[in-house]
Length: 554
Image (cartoon, rainbow, N blue to C red; front, side):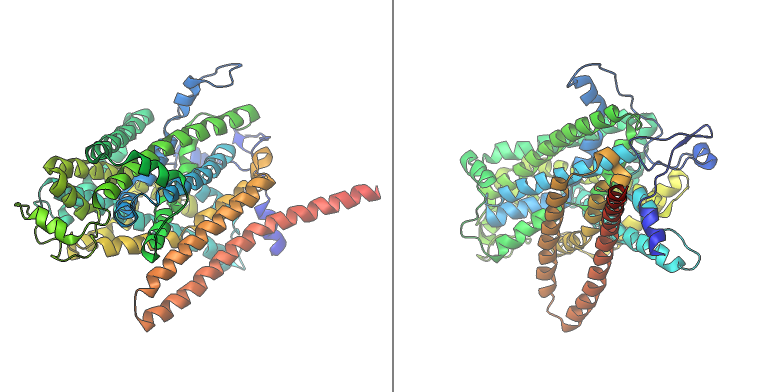
């Protein structure tokens, strides 16, 4: 059985066209080309593919860069969702400018991981969920349970991350609508409005893929303008901004700031975004049998992703700097005195001298208190754009993951409906039974939940992009394998620390025991993924050594 699984991990398939098997020199896995699949395309978002212009003998072409522009910006929206915005504002309020270098480092690590995701999609023509479905153990009549369990568990873990992210995004939209309506739209009504308009916007690609990408670009522009306005209004010290960004030091920081630094990494690097990006890059017309085209696509996608994440980084810096300049070391009493001028939020902050604690909702209120109503409404507009855009890309992530792991062949509407229902149901329950003013604890829990799912994206993406049987000439070199493994270990260790810190605040022996049992099961499955990933490497070395010995004997 072991040999059968190893063979499956190293299998090489050939694409079929018009019933003729054609060998692809630069990609060993190809999407299934059965008649059924050809009659009814099952991939979301790819009813049309964007053509790439041919510019002969040009090292760099702006026309080609424009043709490849789109997937990276959709991917970057996950770096701007309400969960990230809340992490940014709490970082500024609790640590000032001192953790900007952590944000910069996390964004760079995110870029390197997104590079791996894009390369997998370009080289194989399949996204990460599809590759996981094909490369992990196949169905066996005698070991049916063993065959399905890894895939199902992996799918459930990624689905949990999507649900957690979606809850932050949808509730972020609902909070923005509540602020814009001065409390007239309750949280549950905002959730329902977000659900409806998400369905509407998701079908914009019926009018053309580029129009949908332009709409996402418009939402990113709204965020940049909104949070940029707050940045100019507050006018933070530029020297402190640059110092915090490029000097990796946190003077006078304690446990609170350390937890916040870990929270930044957990908020920026999201597991489902790896799956999303590997799927979005399939939207361009690329001849995967042509090494030059594949190499060129990898280059332009990396440039586009760099630009997109640079824009998202600037927007995140705007938010951190605004709250660092205006609200670092502020007390509740200072806000109470400001609110005494007739604000409808006079009971939101306790009248004491404790350090001010803010979230997306309270942050908008405080901005409105100190800088006028315009600051509050513009903040709410930015949050609405962040929540709406990330909710849509989160829905795409859910569809790609379900299609890949479960091999779904449903209609587009059925897939959207199922994906939305899975993610929205818990969100709606929270909105009905939770007060809009007390959601910070839930946001911390959701960040922990997503942190725990990181290995289920990072281990597969590093494994598959390092296998020559999958990537051929584009497999990771030794330097990428070592650095990638180091980054993954570091990120997972940081996020596990975040989880431990959160669990220790629960103050319940029963919850400690439950957390310990879940941790054992969790670490066991992570160990399985690592072992499954090492198997092909070891087999490849064994085959190479055997071949070398055979040559020596000859």
